[in-house]
Image 1 (cartoon, rainbow over the protein chains, first blue to last red):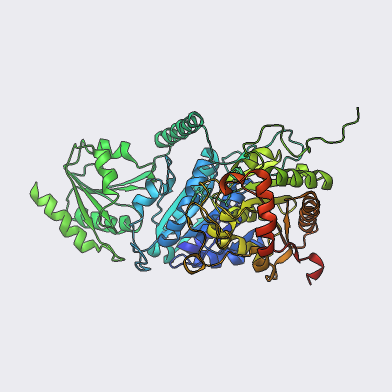
Image 2: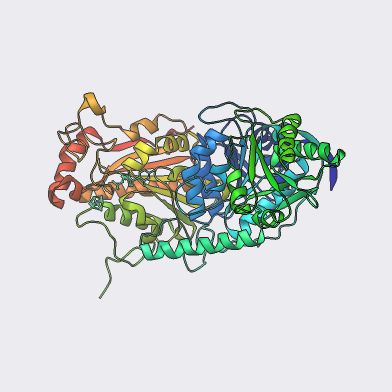
Length: 353
Length: 248
Ligand SMILES: Cc1ncc(C[n+]2csc(CCOP(=O)(O)OP(=O)(O)O)c2C)c(N)n1
Ligand code: SF4
């Protein structure tokens, strides 16, 4: 265990290695480049493989092969590349393959720009590709949390046999912070993957990694099984942080970089003695709706703050379920919301009281 | 009585869904025989495509993967990088490999990925109803070229073996045909050589097999074999385009 200074993107790489990830397949795109640069150097040092694919379609299908072979494997990209991966992610979910996919979100739609954004929320939390499936989506807000969550991501992936997405943005990727990191994380997931397709080697029966179920009865059965798994994850794996929510009448809801700004806003209000708090979802799927719904009994208003035109607010609405009014403040296109503007927006709501 | 002909051990004992007279079945058998003869069944892993051969991951009794359309070489890359001691092969149609999957096949070959690719060229998209494939011959009638493939509109058919053989990473590239017993014999030899190339770690290997689709060609099985011989072989010459000895 050591305390060191690390950049967010590098922390993803080092955290993954210490979680036992030996394989990375990726294709260059800003703003996640430090991660592949780091892993290209580090993975061979630990006997792993860094392979640059011909495209994000190539990378995600290499991930499918490596995950099917039982390895801990990761890929990383940003908006346009993650869009290209969607078919592959759907296959991974269908075949129930564990893996970690990093999306350092940039401004969209289209080529957009390379500035930080949170506009891939819908894509990440609604499956993203075709079919009935979900990914677990984790949204850290500090470099330390990146380290903690990347380790957790691999365990969740293995325990539930599901792809896990780490959703960050350029600010988080570039940010340098001191972190405490273990030499090697002890996995809580089963190490042996009996289902992996690794060559029969005297096993006596074949293993098949596939998402094909040609008979409708079979596919329905499979989808019911996936849904039960999603249900269990929803029940057991919601993670959130409450910041000054105890007596809050106005609750901001924000994740990742935006949540850091919102914490400063809450501090500003608290200095004036105003009852403002923040709920920060750490898992975006499963969304922490239980806590949000119970907070709706106490608060008068909610303000969703995002670096998008309003995507996470859908989940806030579903969670609050009509109990209290929900408002929105967002910046888009790579613009960061500043504390002063959020403060003003929030103050309007407090004045309405 | 002495048994002179039996199901190869690498094939599962189950009925295949291929149409009567389709040569996919012959190609399956040749692969299974090669695996048996090389005694690598327990180490072998097949990556199946999307296409008529989507169920080949059931027919081969070894460990298996179902890949998305065109991406089998990328999936095989992922598998092989994790399990370098195993024998990994893909089985792909011409739509799968030579249209949607061109990027994956070209770069797997360029990297010298130590996998074997069995490329079934039947000059048509069979599974989806007989549409034009990148390998469809000029003048050939398909459901999307009702007047025959026109060069002006659709360009000319792709010769994948020739294309891939210029890449340094390719160690063994051959084109064979299964339209007659002599062809089948040569096809078997090429498939075995391709696997041997992988086993000895020499690089990327691919065997393109000219194959029939009586159903979508609208021909009897016999007529289809003759059509293949008379039309496909002149455009797609048979032979070895690259052999491991050329690899420096
Ligand atoms: C992304 C995607 N696009 C299209 C399809 C539909 N599709 C299924 S099989 C196929 C063509 C297969 O043709 P080929 O590879 O030549 O194999 P064959 O059926 O002739 O053996 C297509 C286009 C698909 N499954 N996935
Ligand atoms: S449609 Fe053509 S390629 Fe497919 S099984 Fe039938 S004959 Fe064979």
